[in-house]
Amino acid sequence: MGGTAVGMALRRWLLGLSADKHDQPERDYLSGPPSLAWVRADVGPGVAAEALLVVARDGDSGLRLAAVEALGSAPARWWPVLDSALRQRWWSAPSWSRRLAAELAGAEIDLLSLIVAGCHRDGRIREAAVVQPTR
Image 1 (cartoon, rainbow, N blue to C red):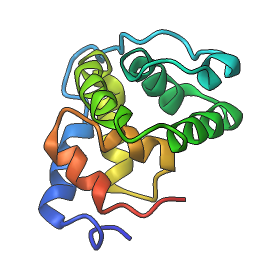
Image 2 (cartoon, helix red, strand yellow):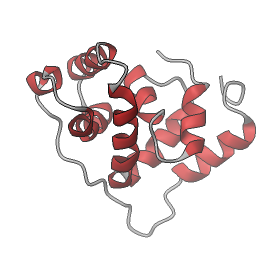
Image 3 (cartoon, rainbow, N blue to C red):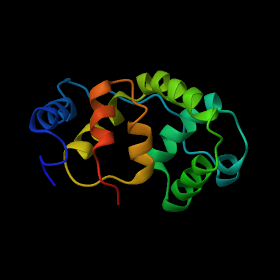
Image 4 (cartoon, rainbow, N blue to C red):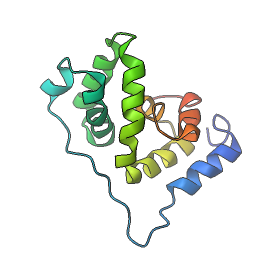
C-alpha cells in the first residue's frame, strides 16, 4: 500500500508527525478502558467520545468489536455530536495521535481506529482516514 492510497506529501506529513521531537515523550490524558457492559450501554455521544478513544487505543478485541457494533447501531443524529466531541477529546491524546499518524502512513488500520481517526481534530489525519483500506 505505502504511498498509493495515501498521497506521498500526506504520507510524509504523517510520518513527520509520528516522530517524537520532544526530550520527554508526551503522555496521553485518557482514563483506562471501560467495561464491556459500559461500551454496550446506551450513553450519549459526548459521554462516549473519551471511551471510544480509549477503546480504540487500548481495548482488547472483544471490547473493540462491541464498540464497532454500538457505533453501527447508533442513530444518524448521534454522529455529528460524536464527531464534535471526539475532535475536542483528541487534545488529551497527543501521544496516540502520533502513533495513529504512523499507522495511517503505513500498513492497513483496523475499523475502530479508522473511525476515530475520521473524527480527529487535524484535517490531514481525517483525510488519511478517508482513503485507508481496513482490515
